[in-house]
Every structure is written in structure tokens, then in C-alpha cells.
Amino acid sequence: MSLLDELPHRCSIFRYKRLSDGIGGNTFEAALVSEDVECWQQDAGASTIKEYDKKGIRVTTSIYFVEDPGVDERHKILITERFGVAQANLDITDVSNPDVYDVESGPRPDNSAGMGVVWRVDCSDKTSNTQ
Image (cartoon, rainbow, N blue to C red; front, side, top):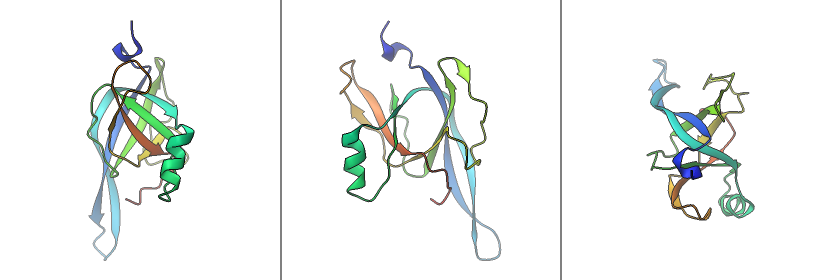
């Protein structure tokens, strides 16, 4: 069995929507887009970190998918399960939750692992909802 047959993590994908608060400001609401999506969260590689650092963007994590997850910079990814074990904190709004990732790039095909093509999404672990 190949790793691509069953990735070791699962996640939920949320999209943040900006809403008016009625007094001239904005609030944000997280809308669930997909859940129970197979993925593989890894620390970002040095070359990836350097690539984004040149643009002033802090990337800490790359998350891999077997199909294009259809995300962009308005999305957050919550890792819900690692190796069959459910994560304890599933609160997407908890700024201290280490399993919430801000998407910093749209998905890109990646064949660097030599196992076939996966879709790589580069993310940061900051959890402020300021999109």
C-alpha cells in the first residue's frame, strides 16, 4: 500500500467570510467547506520557507492532499485527526490551537516525494482571522 492510498491525517477546511457588524466595523464567520478530508501535514521545507520569506510571508507548514482541495488565502485548515487519533481541540477560533493553519497559497501539484503527484498547500500556524 502506498502512502497516497491513505494519507495519515484528516482535516476540516473552513472559509472565512467578512460580515458587517452593523456599526461600521467587520466581524468574521468561519463556514465549513469540507470535513474528514485526507491530508498529510508536514513542517515546511527550508526552500519553501525561504521562497515565502522573500515575499514577507511566514510559512511554517505544508499540507498535502491527493486531490486539489480548492483552497486559497481565505481558508483555514484544521487538522482533526493524526494517525487515527482525534485531536482534542477542534475549535477553529481558538488562537492558541496548534492544529489551525492559515492558507498562504493555493494548491500546487508536487511530485517531489517520488510517490506520484500530490497537491501541496503552504500554510502558517498563526491563527488570527484577519483575512
